[in-house]
Length: 171
Length: 171
Image 1: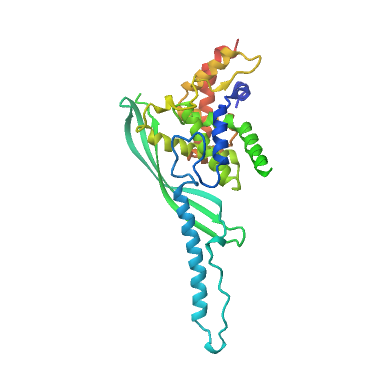
Image 2 (image 1 turned 180 degrees about the horizontal axis):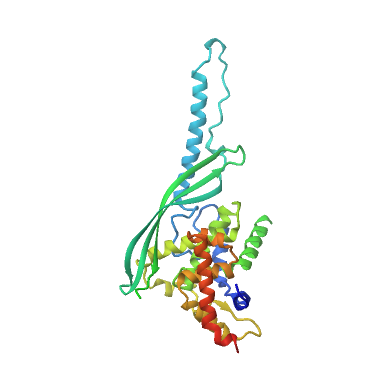
């Protein structure tokens, strides 16, 4: 990198990107202030992506995770009771609590994605005139949730397609 | 008290990093209103659910903003002119940098104009490197491109800018 490039980089770094509008701060404040996953007060974003962890879809995953954990604990307890236990010495085992109110809260700890396929779908025209290349990226997103109280973890993978339209020059 | 502290914490963080994130979002959206929307969604998601994740929050947010922008772009064809009329919408004058005291206004405008003329894939790398201060490794991961491609796009972008801005440089 020669001197003129370094000078240019310095000049560019000196420029300060435009500050977000005060209304954006208000909107974020409104969203963060909203309790739980209620619809935030104030201005709503004009769309919500399906990847939003606060969306109802993630509630479903959380509930599924909690149910699976409870079922696993109950199943293991039942197995230990029914196999290898002599009736004469059976004492009432302490059943693990399956009270949903005590279901521990899982926290997201990791998110990763793997690109497993990339396909060039050819030339397309944006707005009917601008030539562009359409690329399809296929990812496998993996999310890991952990319960800090007992170190239990849940992991699931979701396939995701990402389509990118890149400007193409025909010259 | 805790809520007030929490409020102050996110606000301080956002005031420090918000302008850079907004500049980044503007590379992938059609309007300033769209850029603010995707920044809002990505930041709220980060602050609610991803703050505890390891790694550089700037890189995580850049990836999140990009995904939100791609989701928005997919819906773009189905959208109407509602964005121009959106409540609280901000007029997009095309400027991406804030004026500073004692600056050369014409020079700033010239740089903004030269940036707009850069190919999108070079401009996004430049913005991530210069104003978001990401490493080439982080840029490559965020854009799902090879490391060498990220570095070469950056070099091409600087070279193109230097060529465009040369007359003024030698004044």
